[in-house]
Amino acid sequence: MNRKTLIQQDGTIPFGFFENPIGTVNYLDFSLRSPFRELLPSAQREKQFVHFHFLGFASPKFIAGCSLSYAKGETTAFFYLFDRQSRQMIKRGCKARDGDIATITLNPDDGVSHISGKGMDVQFISDKKDRKKRLKVNFDGASVLNMEFSETTPSFDTLRLCTPTGPSGWTYCQKVAGIPAVGDITFDGQKYDLEEIGAFAHHDFTAGFLRRDTFWNWACITGQDASGRAIGLNLSNGVNETGFSENVLWVDGKREPAGLIFFDYDIEDLSRTWTISSDTQNLNLKFHPEGHYSAFNSTSSTPTDFTQLFGYFEGSFTLSDGSKIYLDKIAGFCERQYSVWW
Image (cartoon, rainbow, N blue to C red):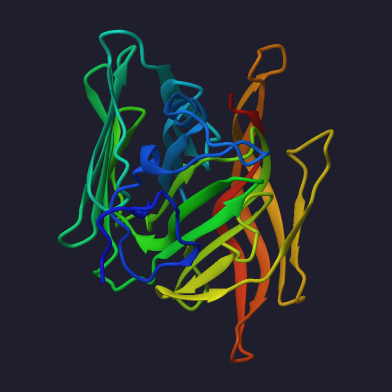
């Protein structure tokens, strides 16, 4: 049965995996407590809540990423489009100011998120009827990306997971990767059809009361293997690891667990090759960065050190039935993030 809201009537939240849509993340109804179990006023719920959508696509020629986020009482967006052959990139970001459009839906399957400012306009539209998602990005009135994907055609086993976070918080994530994208992009004055360039979409909806200072590594693969199977991979450590794990692999939309994940990389130079492995030894990957998008501020009261790299993966993954998936230069993302949210 589909839920209408995530938080229950008694102010508590259920943990674990959800097979059906969870409805609205009604975070203001959650009974948020201090680390010493004291019930906090509603103003603290607004202050401490973190929410973002990150989505885009990867293909043999282009990689794109777009974020719409609410944290620290601010609504922000960024977008980049990277040409893997020429190594050129277009990017833009904005923080909503008074008078700007700043709306982010709290329902991962329904509603409209719209952020507009500084000549940048981003709209992300979710339709619950057929679980269809659409992302539109304009720069200075001109279309840059018009992308659409559906979680029903083809049928897709969406990841929905809520885990305890810290002494009193929680994190809900909903993710897809390795799902065909349709639409078009415009780069350097030329329009490209997403289906023709072999684009595969990904979407990460995350919301909750995260640790005040949060660190994570993350990897995402979205594309096809050599045999033409749609491959998606979502790997992380640092957040959703309490009792359950968000680490999963999709093959043609079917999901299976990927174990606990270890990221090994050069802290002095994130652009060097990363090694990613699992505790079960079923997964062994090398990630080769081609470019990055980053934000760094160590002097603010809410500092951040964020680097999202994009490039390609090589390696293998052993499925639960003993068969192996071989990855040969399949595109995707790796990320290192540290943030103090409030």
